Length: 574
Ligand code: ATP
Ligand code: MG
Image (cartoon, rainbow, N blue to C red; front, side, top):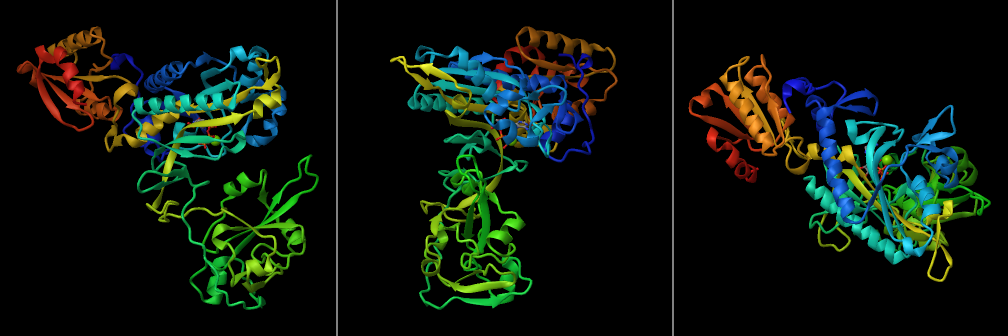
């Protein structure tokens, strides 16, 4: 490709609306331009890179027997209503105003509805169906360029199995394909077990790339044996134990004290573990459960609640509203506690660190009052204990072999065992060997195409630009001609360009006239193609050309006559 014919608008300046390296570099190197919040135009260089990522993904999906489809983004409302997700997605789904249609944020519904009339016998199973297609999500805070777009490309795959063992196999195949994909794309990644959110599945893993720009917080153990999303991470945390003083519980006045910090200050203590944080949660009524249910949850004052862990135990749980707090507990947030509950129909759960603890201080269920010497064993009959706290940086791993650290990461892929959630809702069934109808068992597997490229740049850039390598580099060679209009330098660079491209190399040839060598070199570093070749007057005098390795900045000279034969050798050194 000749630079003079290519549309490659590089920028010297950092665009004002971008803060993270991959976004800045994608705009500066002429890969993308923003149309509106979270919506990007892919310029030729960007598209070329995304297509390379797609090629890797497609090859690995085909290698596990995946069949490629292309399903529409527009889909009818009623399909989404059938699985309940029209409502679950809320404002995050794009709705077409003048039609009963939505723009699909994912394709469980559409693929399952296609499977329903077409996969009807055990003889047709298992199947792996996938597509590389545009998704639309009304992300509330699109940021970081294509890392979180409102329109983006996803490879989404779905497995259809007759048995649960079959699902395990399909899932493992995808895990293997994903490892191959991310390795071939040059990402340093790890996997974490994850909560599957609105998907409603059981087992699921996320593929993560450690990067400051990441929006997920993950917990990693120092021996690399444990990695988990913070939302569900566990650690070895000491039970705070009993003091066994058997002091009677006692109410005391705490005017205007709302938070644990204020309470600790008021009492003049630094150890907050015995200041039990109490919060009221509501499990809203569903048709099969007539009434709302209430849960009072307790964690140590120096801990935080994990709402995800709570949600994994009690589906649909949400924090109580102020009016509910008053009605059920008889007090505002900040004065609630496990004893003196106004409404006795409340389930009380406490974090494992609090198991059988005594001498606790918590709200009195009466505004501006707290109670001390609460003994969970003595005063709170029926309390149950479970892990509901958020892990903290520096804690010990569960096996006590290492310490845990927290870091930011980008989720590049996600695999779920969906089970029968969608097939059940949409009635996708097959006939087994005995002619009996069974619900198809499904898995779902997603990868963000642009997000892979962005995550790669987050991990592979320096002050001058991007450092591409391997299979997703847009070109293999960046050939720079340091010429004035049309002089012999340009002619010999052009000759080399023709030889290299005929030999099958992908070459970006900077043949621009009237552009200074300095600008050409800066552009080459910004775009980041791994191998740079420079043809200049100075080098030509010695019949040489200059080679620069983008990653290390190391330069060599090589005889013009040897260059073609020498390329494989140079590529070895990358
Ligand atoms: P996130 O937690 O980042 O919102 P998600 O859990 O919603 O991701 P999935 O629904 O599992 O993501 O989608 C599969 C893959 O699609 C993700 O692993 C990610 O690579 C990509 N992806 C999801 N949302 C976006 C987005 N808004 N922009 C770009 N890629 C995305
Ligand atoms: Mg999301």
